[in-house]
Amino acid sequence: MTDPARSEASALRLSAFAGLALAVVGIVWGLAVSSQIILFDGLYAVLGFALSWLGIRAAAKVEAGPTPRYPFGREALAPLVVGVQALVLLGTFGYACVDAVLVILDGGGQTAVGAAFAYAVVTLVVVLVLRALLIRRTGSSDLVAAEAAQWTAAALLGVAMLVGFGLAVILERTAWAWLAPYVDPVLVLVAAVLILPTPVRMLRQSYRELLEGVPGDDVTRPVEEAVERLRADEDLPQPQLRIGKLGRKLYVEIDVLVPDDDRWSVSDADRMRRRLMTELDRPGQVLWLNVELHTDPGWDQVEVH
Image (cartoon, rainbow, N blue to C red; front, side, top):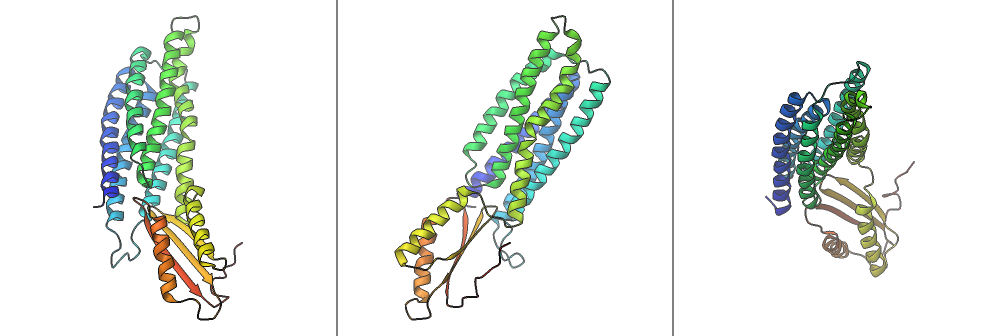
């Protein structure tokens, strides 16, 4: 196992077991203080554990590399798992929002807000530490980035609980005490609104990669700059450049229409390929590079709508 793969597996295991621990604490604490938002937090952690385990399995399959049955490898598992994570989170948020609305319509809920506030403080500290650790170890791993995004969502949930339960503690000591029972279900709705962009962003990324869409500027810009330097140094015609990303695998295809003479050879293409491999090499990234020199004007003409 390579160092990036080992770091990825270690980060995923850390996320999984931390999620399991927080899930147990959240469910037990939520039942004890009759808090819907804390129960939601615990169930969110259960989902996080299950999805982290799925990510670990996917990472192992991806690291196995190409096989006779999968000659191009199984990098597609990474964006597929990210998409599954996003869909599960969206479904969970939808269910929680419906339940919260029903509680509000029923007159709110009775929650031990002091104990709930203590839970919010403890879990927020733990979540922020875990989020920082995962962000530091993300590298080029989409799976670890997805885990970090989940912990970011958990941190937003923690902030919402901290502010909400703090407000509830204050309300109980004022003439506005009748509003306190509504704080818990309202927090669920607020948390869903705050967290919603995270799974939506994950789903869009997964969709784009699985359909071989153009990666973001942070991926394409270094490739375009390296190819332009090569073109200028070698006095090449403008090439047809295609870039795709699937998990940790970066596909770069460069087709160059050259004059039908003896100026260019196979060794020239090999030399250009080696140069680009050196310039574009990144830790944890698997580069699949193809440099083709040809004289057929119709070979690389692809109609783009």
